Length: 566
Image 1 (cartoon, rainbow, N blue to C red):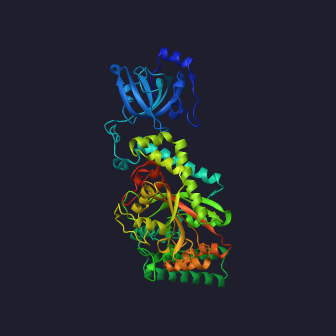
Image 2 (image 1 turned 60 degrees about the vertical axis):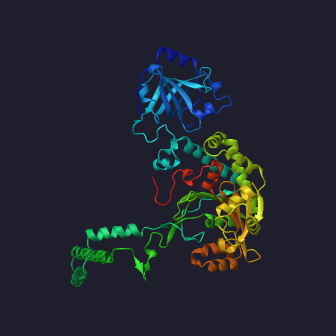
Image 3 (image 1 turned 90 degrees about the horizontal axis):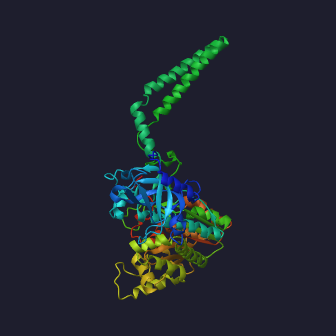
């Protein structure tokens, strides 16, 4: 940044002396723009105060034949911009007005002229620092940009109004998540990202391995230093035999200690050389194999390992000891899907509750979702108003509806019957008992039939995971999904199967191997307990709140087939 500056005029110096300075934020020598503009009076009551602010220029324009300039400055603390007035005697205006320029300025807050929309503006006394921009090359012009375009400049898109608003909403939801569970006595547990078990049993997992990179290293090494021949190894063995004979003769001749030690050293070197040659002779190009299959014992973890699709199984180990726990972290799915609802990397909130059943699970899920919605209404209303204005006129009304309405609860069988009786709409996916409800079915239930959130419970066992508790009818499991308008399924959960013999049978029915889940079965062998839990797809919650259509636009760094920028 350019830190040189023109000296302030005498008039400005006198202004500095008479004005009162607002205190800095913690850990930064500046005042956040939201501290000024988010006051009930829009900052008017701060007129006459001296402040230091920093931010990026959204728009800038020279006025008065180049005698001064207006800058719309935003520091990311709120959606509103602070209007900044800079006189040409303070700084070269051409350096300040390009969109994207970063400025750090000190000035006095003033009430603007009558008739302007701003409640307060900043008259600059000093320009402290400037991060210049070449307007010809800057990828984010003042024109309206599509969200699709912004995915190609993912490193700069946080500077846009939309992505910055999404980031603040996402932050608020994350803070609200921890607040809800901490206030309700849950312990936060960090579950592993690298796992050896498949929670969903779907097999669509990213594999974690060093076998490929190890094979590349071996191939390079073989090219650089070819393995020894059999003749070289035999020669090394012969040398050891010779050196051994020399040592034996010296011992029998009672040679001097110096001569004996020298020969022993030569024998040791010969043995070490043979060991190195034999080790190098084992180097073979390609992936190591055993019995016609990849030999994972040679891999980093000595077994197959994957990126997790869920922290649920691991966090259950803590629930079966510490009662109420939750995990909140990234999960991964190697699904070749290009829909607006799928990501390869996404975040999950997964609580687990001991000594609790399916009804307790539904109660917790409902309370959590309501808490999130109310939190946004109480703490993020300005960003939500931005979403209403630009993306979804019903976004705030939807939050109010969900936060204040009791969720409807119906069984899967009842849901299927309701959908089968629908005559005014033809579904793309046929409705019959046993299907996994599609998004169109879920949204019809919550948006049309009930017009509020719906919890569907007791699903057919064949469409649910092995760990869900089998009901007495032996056809359904104690599973539940929370359906909300706009998104459909927001939460999936269940009472977990705590009976050892039943869960073993379920694993075998689904043709999964028992060995990777042996540790999980120990939770049923030793001190088993009824427990339940659920998972909330965090990005789906952001989609629901904002009304944005594509899930790639509500995560900071989207990963999907063909794209993993940065």
